[in-house]
Image (cartoon, rainbow, N blue to C red; front, side, top):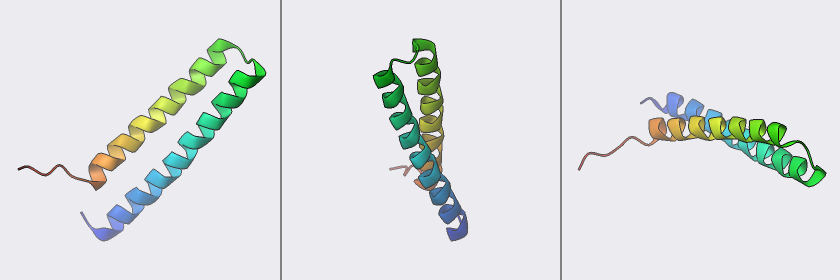
Amino acid sequence: MADQDQVELKMQMAKLKHEHADYDLAIRAMIETGADALSIQRMKKKKLAIKDKISKLEDQIIPDIIA
């Protein structure tokens, strides 16, 4: 993989990690304020989808080494 491609993937991953942290804070605030369970569940689902995207990017950046 080209260096430029890796830089772009790392930047995208950093953005997703930041977004994941934002969702975490939002979920905590919703729980503290007593938001309805359905809204909290939806936020958690979005947060999980972001985590999946992060995992896929990590797999692209760090290829498996066949030993």
